[in-house]
Structure formats: structure tokens, C-alpha cells
Length: 216
Image (cartoon, rainbow, N blue to C red; front, side, top):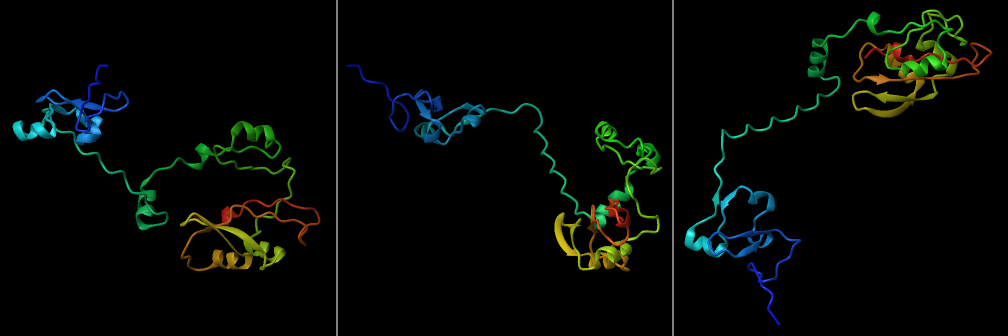
């Protein structure tokens, strides 16, 4: 029975699933994992010498690179913390289109489900005339303090801490005091607050977003 050829330092038969490299000194084949040569790195070797041939012929010879070395990849920019001094400087340096260029101004009667599905809320919508809207709206003088009066200061609401991008819960009275305070050490946002069956109107109303009282 004919013997099976063996290769490498491990003296094992050829295995098609394992990467091998030929020594240019002794013409024997070696598993890359046995001699510490990665398959991806083998393409950069011009003359390979196995550990035994390194003693006689010196180390392997690498291919000479053509052209100048590739420049180092630039480091990706570090994210800027929201609300920081750098964030404010960069924000002030940007230019934005005016509201007249981006706002949609449908009438109340035009603001239908089909209209919203078509526009997909891709730009802000301002309803200039409430006739036909089918909603009961508070007067222009209505403020967060009025919301506190009708709902109660102890009502717990969902608040977003914008700087940390983390939700939290707090009393409505504390949030209203924060809005009217002289200084704000953080940016808090209530995206919406809906309530019904209050003393203000007998029918359940739908209130507008309180974002307008929380400048960013």
C-alpha cells in the first residue's frame, strides 16, 4: 500500500481546508497556522523561508511596495455633546432655510388623514385657520400654568432629558416651575400632554403640543 505524503512541521497529509505556504528554500509545504503566517499576509511575501531555512538563508523576503505609502486613515470625528459650548458654536455657524420655505400651511378643513398620509410629516405643519379642524383649542393666552391649574400640580408626566436623551418622570408643578424659572441647568422636554374631563370645558379636548413653551 502506497504511503500518503506528509507535509509541514506537523507531518500530516494534505488538508484542502487548511491554508498552506511553500518554502522557497526546501520546497516543502507548511500550514500557515503551524508557522505563524496568516493567509491574508502571504500575498505580501516575495520569498518565504520556513523556520529551518531561516537559519540557512535568512528571514523571508517581503515584496517591495510600489508608490508612496498609503496615508493613515483619518480618525472619525468625535460626537459633540448636545448642549455643550462646542455644540452651540457649531449650531450657530449653520444656516437654515426660513420657515416660509419649509412650512406647510393647510386650513383646518384641509388637514385630513389623507393629507397627513401624503405629506408624511416630513416638514412642519402650521394650521393657520382652525375652522373645519374639528378640534376644541384653548385661547392664545393659554399657558403651562393654566395646564397646571386644570390638571393639578401633582399629576406625574413623562419628560425627556434632552442632554442625556433619557426619559424621566416628574410632577407637572415641578415642570411648570422649571419652565418659568430664571435659569435652567438642563433641557427638559414634554412632547405632548393630553387630558380630558377637566373644569375648563365639558367636552374632552385635544391639547396642542407643549413644545412651543420649551425653547431648545
